[in-house]
Amino acid sequence: MRDDAYSLILAAIESGTYRPGDRLVESELAERFGVSRTPVREALQRLETQQMLVRDGRSLIVASLDHNQLAELYVVRAELEALAARLAARHATPEEVRVLAQMVAEDQKAVGDPEALARANKRFHRQIHLASHNRYLVQQLDLVHRSMALMARTSLAAEGRSETALAEHKRIVDAIAAGDGNTADQALRQHISMAWETRLKLEAQADHG
Image 1 (tube, rainbow, N blue to C red):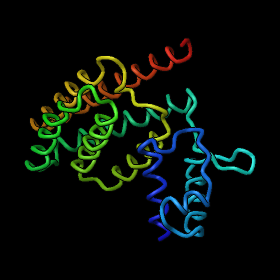
Image 2 (spheres, rainbow, N blue to C red):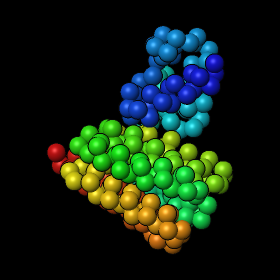
Image 3 (tube, rainbow, N blue to C red):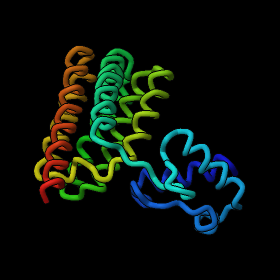
Image 4 (cartoon, rainbow, N blue to C red):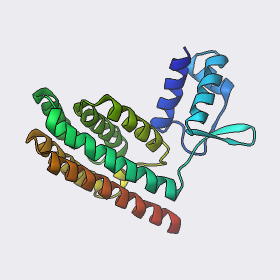
């Protein structure tokens, strides 16, 4: 039950039900998810320890990432994701490669729907992580992607970004399919770099909007 409460609250943050700055109230969460207050309290403490939640007086609110934290997160993400792509090129099974290719093809249907594409993007990257066949790397990437849930919006919402992101996904899959670790590594780094550049542009627009 404790893990259930934690998973439910974390999923609600990741899906954007609760966004950075939103206040989380123990009694409301217990009622919403149909669990008792004790596991909710423990889940909130765990999320605070993981810096997903921060204190605002006596209240707990969903944390937000400042510019420097975002920059640091993208540096770590680029290194770990590139390593995952490199290892996937070496270790992915033919079935895993086919699944990745199918994801890229099917995700074309989500162009124009940033939220749907953001969910598809998470699934795609998660599949690369698993295809690396390195459990410790998968664990570290899980931590990175959990922190990414604290971003207020997806960079895929930027005009034209969804089409270019899917083209980048295809290049990554092609390299993995060819067993070319160097190209897979570089393609993934380029993909993360473009995502970060897009987010910087969105930030700049928001600051002057």
